Image (cartoon, rainbow, N blue to C red; front, side):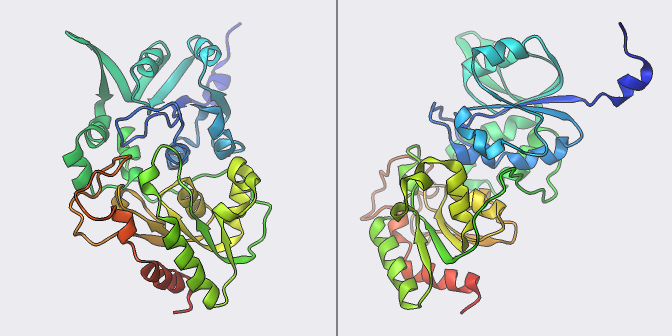
Length: 330
């Protein structure tokens, strides 16, 4: 039985987004430990497809970040059952943001009129990753250290370029509605994922900063001193972030969530580039002085020929001063 013309006109175009966080958009490495921050910071792209029927395939650990998103119609795990299902469907647009050969080969088996992001080529010495059209710059930044260091574009700029569009300030899209009230002045988001230990500001710096706030009589909550549920459950974690007026944070998922929740945010950067992050007028990023010529190294271990790692050079008193400015007290 065929649809009449009016039914065909009502049909929304279908877009498939494949973003698991196994490889970050602007990093060449692959790790089955999903980078949840990289998944979430992809959500501004949804604004470009809000009139489409959107299917998003990701790691199940990222589901709380995408569940109830008003622009996502189907949220599916990346597994063989999903791959089998999607290989029987047709899509108008397929955006693959993963740079793993196996995932790219799988993606090639899914029917789509237009493809964006990454695919593969079969060369003389085997398979290799290739960029579809406008994704060439993103691939260059992720694979060439020199290009990475000189890049001045935000992740949003590059995401929209990958699909042939221009970013015009579109924000993160978070479906979760926090249940918590704002009861703290400052939240210290101290922890980083296992993928990026070099992003961590040392504990003694956090201790000093916490003492400075307490001397000012501010109400403080600290991630590594709260209950395990905050550390293990993303919904509870988002409630915790929502409970503070200002979030001081490493370059991590918590930073992006705090921005999405309209918190004042102070981000601490060293091995990763602050230029890629847009704060939507919610705050800023700070980094050590430029005496560290290796920054951003994009390395998960520090091999710098200095007496200290770069983030150790971020002074707690400077972080205190910048946070007080965000609070509007100094």
